Length: 412
Image (cartoon, rainbow, N blue to C red):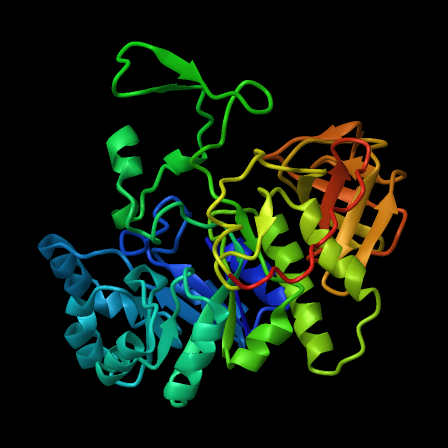
């Protein structure tokens, strides 16, 4: 099975590939449903070619197009031709003729925003020229198996990790109503994640009823996150071709840790010996996330209940290790303040983590300093061996026990 990871900018693209993705998906500015991700533009296609190597790259053109968007797309076609895309992701059928005219050999993948949930819809999209269906998150796993048996000649892609939408994906107007930002045009404010304190009932205008959970707020509209790390064999048995991780707007720390965990799990499923597999899986609990669930794959009772908690986070993402500037000394790319003596951990593609509190930080003049802040040049001399691409983090609180990953839910 292909492992497909998110990339909201060049840095995230590098880490997606470095930490085990077979393929990555990116958005092009103004044409992607993640408009608040950095996305790609200008001459970044040159750097992408260098980073990509022999991995795959998919380009998201999955907004719903108005006439002005169609005109803009046509005007930018020559620019898109510079990108080394292996496929386009789209939901609007109106752009198919344009893409087939200019990219006759580039496969088309149907976006999850099209909400394809059944085998007849998948057959229709296949006949329209799509080589892959990115299934709606609401599709049960047994129905995916039926689709595979019915359509053996089409690729099936399924989300296995990340955020869930409170509505059908991309079909929510809550963001537009509450913040004048359209989810259907890639500008979702994630209003469903906000912390609500009061409700007003229709027959009692002006009478506000508190709905308090936790620290004075409720997450009544917020869905749980999806995590299928323990069930990848079920996806293999169902005939899924590509496992997709959500999160183009999330950090390189999220991209690296989650991609690595799924890479190790897939490799183990394919018979490769993986040391510390359970520990790699447990690492995904150290990334900021909401309460985990298995989505709709094994029933809907679990996911129909909103999450009871806000974000859970045990570690703070500090930065990453750049190129070596001299033996034992590396460029330090700072995302959040790092202080001398902090109990940091370094993670890598093939190391679980290394601990260090005896590192030395130097500024651009080579002078030893007590702290490093975002936006400035620093180097680090660690007390353990490192490589370019390692990531730094530190515990935010006393480490908590890892949450038990539940057994397979009973099918309903």
